[in-house]
Image (cartoon, rainbow, N blue to C red):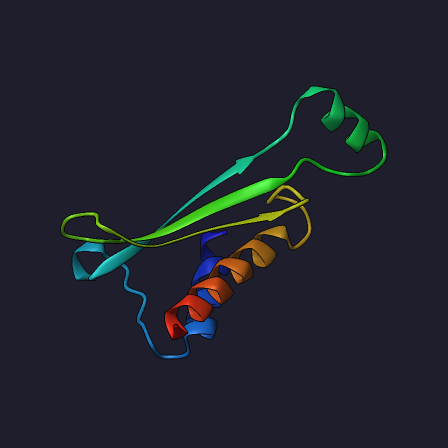
Amino acid sequence: FDDALRREVLDELDGRADLVTSLNKADAYLEVNVEEEGGGKAAAAGRIFGIKNRVRAKARVLTRVDNKVLWVTEVGDRQPLGFGDAAKRIAGRIAKQLRSDWKR
């Protein structure tokens, strides 16, 4: 997921930002938390019909010095990250939202 996210962000931001390998070199950082939603009878019935639990990714950009939140988004997908290209789709959605909000 990390590699897919790096590629997507670099492609979407098209030179507006650089990705660095050390937090000490960064002005801000992107924090992403991924969790799978599900459970209960509705989720079990959904799996019978081929609908997978929904995966949600919550992303934030924070300043490195004081952890001030600069940007927040939440995206989702119906496949777990380990299956198919769900990681790429979620990474792409985060990157596209970041680019869209950056333009405002």
